[in-house]
Image (cartoon, rainbow, N blue to C red; front, side, top):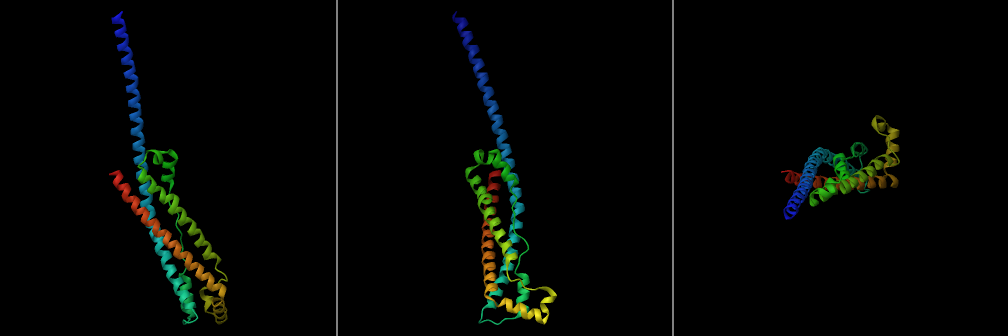
Length: 219
């Protein structure tokens, strides 16, 4: 009887250990898959950021150049400053930047939706990555929309191009330029440009920080 009980106990223990071992192996396999996929997420996010970084830097430079022209326009509109119609119209043509920034976040969205970045990733790194997409990109996009609208709402609109050199149009343009409404619109454009540049530069700094953190994590 004791031998039967002992044999039964050993068999039960063997079955129990086998089941426990299989669970552990399966859990290890799942953990290994998650880690590999998370690493792939990090690599893809890093690629997106490395592509966005020079794009955002270029947008910031273009907007800064446009802003410098706007600042000079405002200085020329000062009643105590000398006014040159030709110089003003040249500055006006340079005071609009052609592009605003739209970041790439498909890799980030895929990692967040899977839960890997949020639940299995390095918490500090995940938070810093999240700041880019949930904070900086959102604010850059929002201020970019304001800037685009500002470029298209500056009223009254001046006649530009070859026609702007006709004597009658020069006279009418100059009259518009000197109005209170036009000056306030130029001031608004300068302020929105300046804020947009600040948002872009803050985004550039955060992207650089996260790329460095990702390199350290991947190594």
